[in-house]
Length: 624
Image: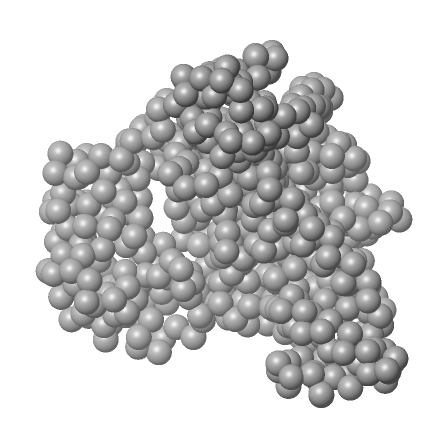
């Protein structure tokens, strides 16, 4: 079999990696433990969330599949932080876990240039520190130009339920033990992390009447820019909210000794921002209750996911604590919650392309790189698949900057800083988040999807019309002015907007108010020709116009700063504010420019700013 790109693992990272490489024309093979589990959602039945929604929108804008699949299989759509500014809003959708998996599996099996093998990879074929293929548990060898490992939580995975320990990558599936040992023997830096999931409850045993109803948005917005928004009208199921109580907390506290998290049974570090229920009670005992979301898992709603009660407590304790919660007094547990420990690769072992520094042509993507979440995994898979294919072609790598995308922030954080805990994306991690909004992900990134052949011509045709209309409108608003005539002030008063006192650019008139389509067209009648998608973008761009200009100036300054040369005799020890670790790395690497310094793991943007100041001071002293 002639293989260009071989992908190990059929989770969210493996799907996007194999689809992107195959769609770019590379002969691709996906090797996965169970073919029917391609696209399985191991934990919660949802896609997106704060900052995670940004990642999905960006993935979609480049040509990934997660957004399209979500729009086909979604059960409820909500915009989180909807009362706040567009930069920190996040799209989230409940999904039908069964339909999501089937959609992704069928997409994989029907994609040209892409084959699937149900086998477990146990080792790699490496010659002169260059990966040449893989060996499976069946003894089969598959030679490939590039190998991408997207093993998720399967590397030496161990599940914990009370004192019970079960080997597995997730419930009911084998762990990848031999491959984990093989990677350790290669000398890669490998750590141990932990995550977990909650119990699943038989829906008919839940009393929803005593819970708070949480519905979806009245006018749901699709995840994918390729979904026709005017025709998007999904069936939406309600979620429900209930709470833990003092009885729940007492049950959990009385069983801390039986919790693997506290007994020393678990070594791996868990996700700080998604703690288990026992960890929440331990850390926040002063709180009288904790919120629980009861979420449907499928359109048939026969099982519910108890979001907020992730646990590894013994089964009898899980039953007692769930029964103590209002509305779940008679709940029947279909699947018990568990914690899972697994090996991960310290991502400082990787370049920004996600290629391994020690082994050429070997890439890592997804949870194996220390991240948590379907969304973080998916975007890494996309980037690894694209870069592996570009490398085969002999073309320049695809690396997104921190000012271009949350994807760029994610990968830069991982490969420069590394992680000792499951990494989760937040809007606060992005320095330029006003530029990196969900709503403009297509404007920012679809050019790359077009370049790599990942977006079809019909979508691109519509996208370019939208982009050109937005640019045309914003240019008009910037170059045309309103004057405070009686007629114009009366017009502003009629739409309940504040008057102007001086000659003002239209973009500032619009930006300072609370405009909608109707108001905008009263001020600029010519804009009636634009559809609602374009109008929405015009209003957002106008609102943030001046702030965006400032951030663009900051971006340009950063780009200019990174070009600055570091003198050959520069003494890093004299730079106050740099840690000893950073100084040691800079002295060892002796980067020629600040950009070179920025590529060293652990050297943060703040460190670069400090270096910049000291370099300028040294230059002044030299010239004086």
